[in-house]
Image (cartoon, rainbow, N blue to C red; front, top):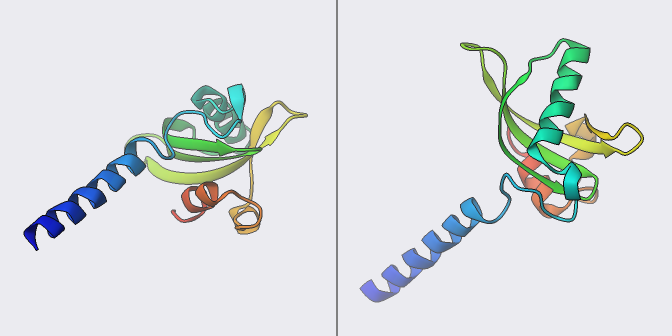
Length: 124
């Protein structure tokens, strides 16, 4: 019984470590190419912030892309009023930048990949 528990615990731990280190990470993936780079997402987010009077990005903690969509877990604001946000963005080829999308509209499992839906739509 102890061997079974140890094996199960090891498998669960390995799966959790894989998810944290390999699954969706702060690197481009899913064929989005050069546009799925931290600098591209941060620049687009900061441009939108300047245009709307929003808060600038302090750090991009995690992101990922699938097709023309991206999610970004970021910290925005100014110390001591920084907040963590989760955004879903869409690549606008005509503007050559990412734009924010309304999560109430875009967060649809038939529109987004499973990973994008899970990571972009179920946090703050």
